[in-house]
Image 1 (spheres, rainbow, N blue to C red):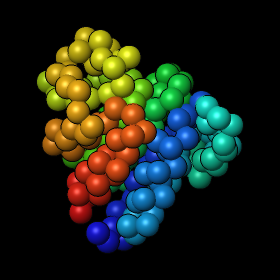
Image 2 (cartoon, helix red, strand yellow):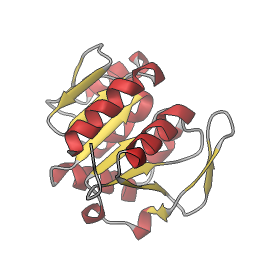
Image 3 (cartoon, rainbow, N blue to C red):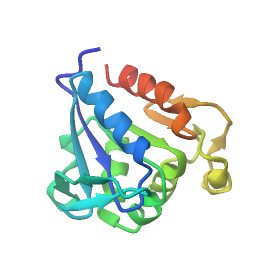
Length: 171
């Protein structure tokens, strides 16, 4: 489980779900991966419960070549993230080069807007099931689904399985 040669981006915007950002960030760092929080701007973003996270890079300072994975936490942040074409391009280009795209809860909105879920098997919080299905995905109700390099989970309770699967995909 040593990921010293791996670098992941975790996308941030205001109203992110606390555990869905912090658990993967700390778990990947514990496994040896480099992790950068990327937001629209290099600034502090606040979770649904007010917990801050500092973006180490803005969307204009990064390139898909910098990362082997991108993680999209849920909460209400994904609705804000998908409004930024540069972040959608980052997700799509990491996906297109075979990198891991991992989404949890409402995080599925971002891959929908990036156009990468058609024909793929995914899960999410049930509230966005229709969005994923209408974008061409096959939706299933499981704690974690891995379809190639696309990993998805439903909610914070699924984080242990989500992170195990993410680490396996990066190894």
